[in-house]
Length: 68
Image (cartoon, rainbow, N blue to C red; front, side, top):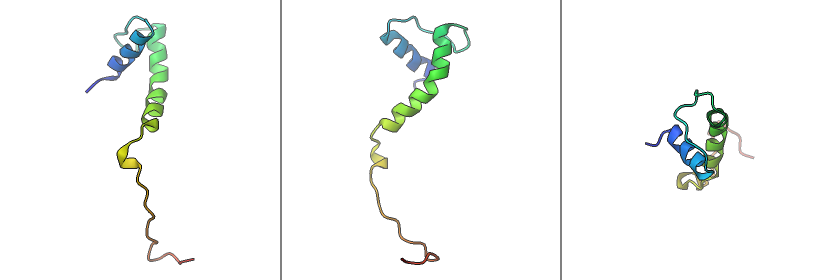
C-alpha cells in the first residue's frame, strides 16, 4: 500500500519540488503537505465515481411508520 509521504512526494515531483522525508522536518513543503493533504485526499476520494455507491434504491417503510 502506498503511504501518504509517497503520494505527497509524487505531487511535489509533478511541480518540480524536492521530496520530503517526513512531515515534521520543518520545511515549507512538509508543512503545506501536512496541512493540505487530508482535505485534498478526502475531496479526491469523494469525487471518484465509486461503483458501489452509484446505485440508489427506495427503502421500504418501517413497519412502525405510518403510510402517507
